[in-house]
Length: 402
Image 1 (cartoon, rainbow, N blue to C red):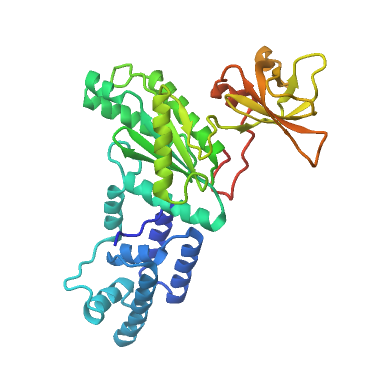
Image 2 (image 1 turned 90 degrees about the vertical axis):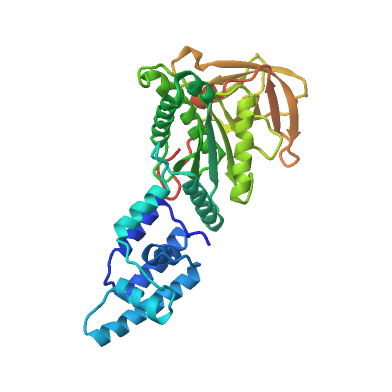
């Protein structure tokens, strides 16, 4: 059985709880149960692994700890002093349950340091693949319980082989180290960024829907492109870009392996589309992610007799509007997106297109939903910065808003 895992912050909290060798048994077990419920993680199994290096399921681990604490009380009565949890555990496991033939006491700090090395990529200082897998499993369990979304990003350095071939592997390692630092500083404390393998990085974003994940992926992409050009690496100017793919739970899958596979598909879609871009996986057949319009964006139709409309959402390829009836498919139209609060001249943005969909609501015969396809795709960066991506509120105190 693989040793149970917690996130780094949760492991630190548990480590401090277990550092007390003479705890009150009732309070100690109560705190472990509270910890298990709050973290939605196997607290007792992790505690047993830390203390005794045994790998048990959580129920069996809880029973073992209760036996050890009762044995400690018996030893305290016989000896006239408290032997502590660790000595009681050694005696119980060696002489009562006989799980160990030749037990060995390991300093807790030394054990934790060994565990930390086993979970850290030595080059970038990020978590390794093991940390990523544990974090994704943990956040999916939490999401099933509370109904929150989880988004996974997989990012790959573009043309990294050419860097190794041109400058050598030592410089390639410095590039990976620089990118790892950039990505680490681009996320919240609650997010988990790891080196996935080779020149691939991955992130688990708790309580984050697709839109928030897209914002983080775009931040990754922009900062890597800017950061690699701002200062030389070992005296060499190495311009680097990344491609990103993302998928979300539960929209793209209900299990970790499925979500990772969908994110990987999206990554290869970004590579095929020309690299240095973000691609989002969709079960439906939409080719572009849709964003809600900012409240400050006003949508108008150009023309003297153009009907009044209200913007619903926008994508690279079109916009969804709510307006008066009378639309016909294939009508040509120019959509104007305005930011009245801004004085920038390019904040009045005309986008020509044609009507491709008209849905009349039978309950509201005076209104219709109209889909307009733009004549030419719009850069997602411009959508993000000017008219789209309504603010995402903070979610449950896990970090700052996206």
